[in-house]
Length: 358
Figure (cartoon, one colour):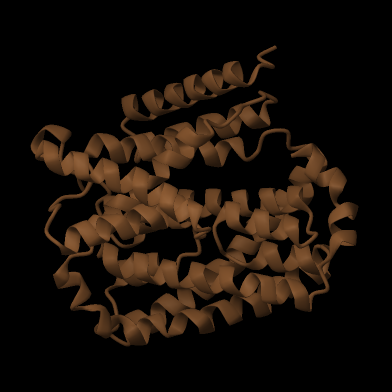
């Protein structure tokens, strides 16, 4: 039943929409992110053959790229030198993560060295899975570990922000579309699509976010746009990001749930300890306020942390610059470590069964 790709996608969107509506009616936090995420997650674990929205979901990420780029104004650029000490901690943070994460996955969880490395590195979910698969890692393990990392962090971070820090999460995500000049909406649309496709053509990692981010940044610094994408667009992006996290659990078996998902949950706890240490360093050193320090060193996905920074009213430039630094370092170092770990075609073929199941 529902074997055709289009039917599976429509069913998935319908389930996510019900989740969003339920969260909204119950006045729960972040209904357009958490509603679709938990509804699709529960449906996936119940055995529904859900399917993501493909290029629509990827396109939704361009909205966040434009939102970040539009938030970087000349005033934000002037503050970059003040962030350099804090940014300098990011490589140290990644070394600490590797020192804890790789032995954890390799020695305690029994992953091969390649899978252990790519499971430990807090890069983008898609990036780490793709790089790990090419290096010969177990794609199913990588998919479930990273999906679990993102799911737990996105679920827990708002609780910490609101409960422990007293942050209100009802900050407007943007002006209504009616309040933004139509020519600026058109410019944002062009920046989103052109930035995405040009970045994709030249092989830029994270093209759907970084391409639009760069394009919108240029438009912002040259005075072509003066606002972020409208609230309706940000909510659209939240919906498909939440759905994508839940869909990552489609087809998971009980054995995989016990091994990969539980391993991922335990690893998030280890990451949380490191994140707290480094966020406390920047906060106690006066390099950042508590909320910005917490969000900047939270090892979630770039898109998800951008959404949280927007709704929390955080300094978007500070938070995103730290996450971009982390992602650039993780992704540029990935091929180097793949060679060091002795990844090869033999490893890739040995994991073919895992790849076929995904």
